[in-house]
Length: 210
Ligand code: OGA
Ligand code: MN
Image 1 (cartoon, rainbow, N blue to C red):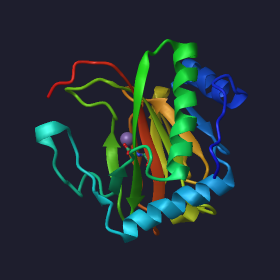
Image 2: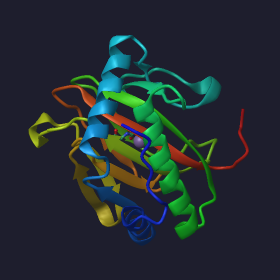
Image 3: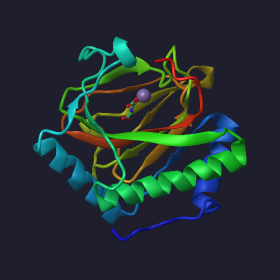
Image 4: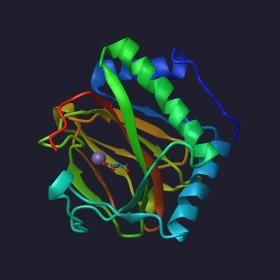
């Protein structure tokens, strides 16, 4: 996938900004072009096959622990310059960062993201994406990478929205979900096959605790 960019005033990005302002979250069913979704999925599977994905930890800094009873995904943090498809993804997310700053004055300064692979049966219990001792994460963004995912495979992202509303997102390839990291509790339900995603967080500057 050649370097692909979208301007930060692209209608798709403005829609996400409006959704976040109105209700704290947004779902875009066709965010990534299919070719890019396939390339990112292939990159994720390649890294998994090479043993580069590791069990994800819970918590931060010295308090990090692997606890499969809380989350069972395997992850690898992204660095720029490793793969063209990943750099394209990072470029798209940077356009979204600028759009969020323009529309919502969030002061987002950076973006951290990782590939995640949930093997069959793995889950992530209900949680918030903001750490108790570190409130830099403002906006969470998850992009799903399995083309042709069917609801009966499970693996929904279950979001707990205002007014006791539960909303399930089917993790279909190319779909993006964005939400306010400190305000939307959510969980990942177990699936019957490998569930691939790119998950990232837009962060503002803060006092790094460690
Ligand atoms: C996370 C998370 C949601 C998903 O990684 O913190 O909640 O649908 N992921 O993968
Ligand atoms: Mn989360």
